[in-house]
Length: 423
Ligand code: ATP
Ligand code: MG
Image 1 (spheres, rainbow, N blue to C red):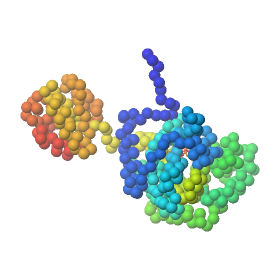
Image 2: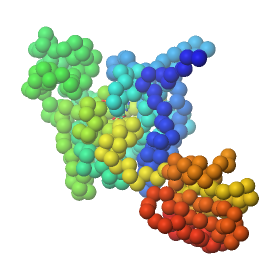
Image 3: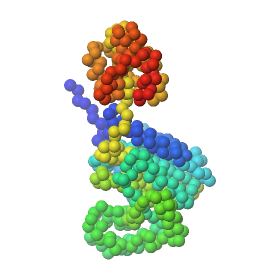
Image 4: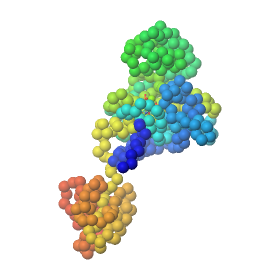
């Protein structure tokens, strides 16, 4: 037998049994952004490598070691997008959507990072994200956080996620802090781990979110960015906190929260859960007022977040919140005997006029037992049975497949109403 070809490591198939849960999640996301008046943007999966180098930052994990980059047949360097913000800004600049305008956008789709695959961390994964342009005030930071809180509510996982919040200040404030932090870290240079030593000069703020407990212990007395912020950035942050208080969104201020991408300023946040083990961040984002300018547009304030869909699906499964997910079939229509087949497909076709009803016709014939086995396997709630008797009496039998309820004979012309009420 020929050797089977396998999927690429860290890249998953979403199988027919799993897709109803994905579709439910995607529907909740679409409905939620629609409720806030956001518009969808779809960008290509492949972009110029330079786009990500210039936006995410040369000395970030993503650009240093996680990107899928290749030369195409013309020798141009292309990259499978590792995130959605850079592409959204690129498209916004290219089509003149950003300068002097307000845009509230969302996207959803696959992203690619060459990381070590493990639970909740894959090489192809899906993100849903929102990006808002043209509004610098904290009320819109609050809006995207309110939107994320509403998502948790709709998915039934509010009690399992918490919000961590920080401000990174503006670039000038951060530059002064950076020097102070480097001076502090230099005292402990020998004790830092390899990663932290490497980042100390290139990206010292990243040292702050080390997962290494020994390095964490050294950082207890590190200078705090909060002490280096000016009045304006402080006011922006406290206004955001006031708004969150006013709408009842709880948060913890985490001065060590820095995020792994270079383009953030002022507000940064993460929603984290402890129901997934190590991969606990389910949604992350912040303000990035400098990025539009950095990518060649006119300066435009911006804020957004990205959420990892696989981690949400894992949470819903782990917490067993998948009961109300409807399968692909509600009604399975069978026909006993050749004479009944035409009637059966007519009935199925007519039932499909009921909005949202999912009807599967039995195909391929076979005896009663075989057809019932298929009906059961389809996951349908009821089966419709048509035999010679039913045909002669202009009736059908409705058999309940999931509950202990007696089979019903229903008049042919009353069937649509009967089924519509049932579902
Ligand atoms: P992490 O610290 O978990 O690596 P990150 O800071 O790299 O996350 P972002 O770039 O902010 O993550 O992406 C936003 C969200 O996308 C994450 O919070 C997570 O839910 C999801 N995500 C990121 N990388 C992966 C991955 N390799 N596999 C699955 N989901 C991911
Ligand atoms: Mg990462």
